Length: 217
Image (cartoon, rainbow, N blue to C red; front, side, top):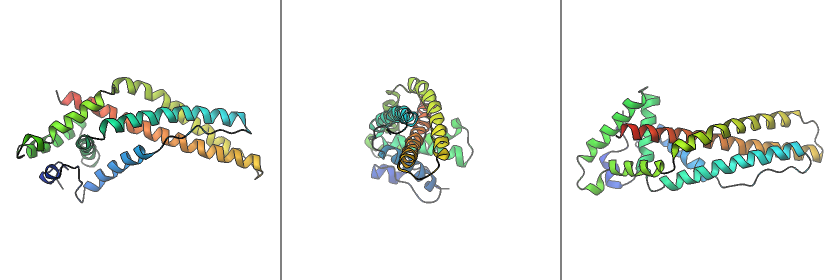
C-alpha cells in the first residue's frame, strides 16, 4: 500500500500528485471534481410545443443554475487549496477501501501529513497549514446553511427527472412536434442529472469539512 499523497515528493513539488496503485482511486475522485467543475452554465430547456414540458424545463433550469452557482463557489474557494482537496480524497479513500470509520481515516491521514511536515526544511514546505487554509476557505461558504438548502433541491430535481423520463417514453411517432418534445425531455434529463450529481458532491464535501473542523479542534 502506498503512503498518503502527502509525501516528501509532494511537499517538494508543491502539488497534490498521485502515486500508482491505490492512488488510482484518489485520481478518480479528483477527476470527478474536475468534471463537475468544468461544466459551463446553460439556459433552461424550453419547449414551445408543450406547456408541461416547458414548465418542467424551467423548473430544472432553476435547480441547475442553483447547483452550478454553488459548484462555482466551491471551486473558487478551493482552487488555490489543492492540498485540502487531496486531504479529503485521502480520507474518503481510506473509508471506502480500508473500511475505516471517518475518525480513524481522518487521524491516519493527519498522522501521515504530520510525519512528513516534521521533515520539512522550512515552514513554507509544510502541508498541514495549507490543508487548514483550505478548510477555512470552504467553511467560509457556510456549509451548515448550504446543506439545509441542498436537500429540497435534490428531491425536487429527482422528481423532475422521473417525470421527464416518463414523458419521453410515452411519445409515439417521429413527426416534428413529437421529436421536439423528445429532444427537450432528453436535455431536461441531462441538466437534471448534472444537478443531482453536483449537489451530491457538494453535500459530501460540506459534510466532510464540518467533520474535519470537529477533529481539527
